Amino acid sequence: MNNTDHNRQKKIAVINDFSGFGRCSIAVSLPIISAMGIQCCPVPTAVFSDHTGFDSYYRVDFTDHMRRYIGEWAKLDLRFSGVVTGFLGSEEQIEIVGDFLQDFADESTTVLIDPVMGDYGKLYHGYSEKLAKKMHRLLPYADILTPNLTEACILTKTEYHEDMTTRDLRHLCQKLEDLCDSDNAVRIVISGLNRKEGYLENYVYSRDIEPQLVMTPKIGENRSGTGDVFSSIISGCAVRGIDFVESVWIASEFIGRCLATTMEMGLPKTDGIAFEEHLFELRRVFV
Image (cartoon, rainbow, N blue to C red; front, side, top):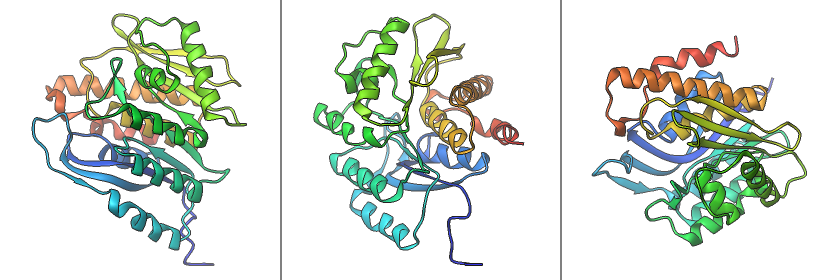
């Protein structure tokens, strides 16, 4: 047996920032993916004391270190069952991620691109249109794409309005699919739709399935980290061979239970969702 083979266990690389407090990004993905029986291997893009939703935070940009960090993985000949990308704050980071996908992802790797750029019809503060355009660099690598409605509209240059019909959403996904320019059926979920009062919807699309809506009751306010929980579960399910639509149900219902617990605990909005109370439930999915 080759004792230097590091690729015997399923692994997902997560490329995102790290926040020490506030339950988002890598700090969310690492325990969730681990709970699903998969090794989580983080690539930090920046380190935050607490996320940017707080009035004050300390930040260290990791861009200048990323290539050398990743280079050590190349020496180990690491291969990944999945890759998840999250918030990328510069054109250089997007280029680094593109090179990472070129070097580390193969036909057996499920790549999930979460194009974190904005919400409520607007780019996030400090996120430029030029940087948003650069996100197209990563789309051809996507096996799974998880934009919210704002991000889907930005990528496709579509006018944003919250009350899009299901026909509008289908056309939007078809535009996204064209941008991905893949021979494979790209799986797309437009997440967090607020079209019906009291509910959140996720529109699930792929050319090899009938598009459909996954609808769950809306619980409390929008909170940091829910998108990271969502993408982590979707990626973990894909690596474990779970049907795509079912994975969206698993993620949506899990987040709903976590939000209910969070409300019961009275946690501040900035503190994210209390997913720790429910991690054991993810493990049960695969037993």
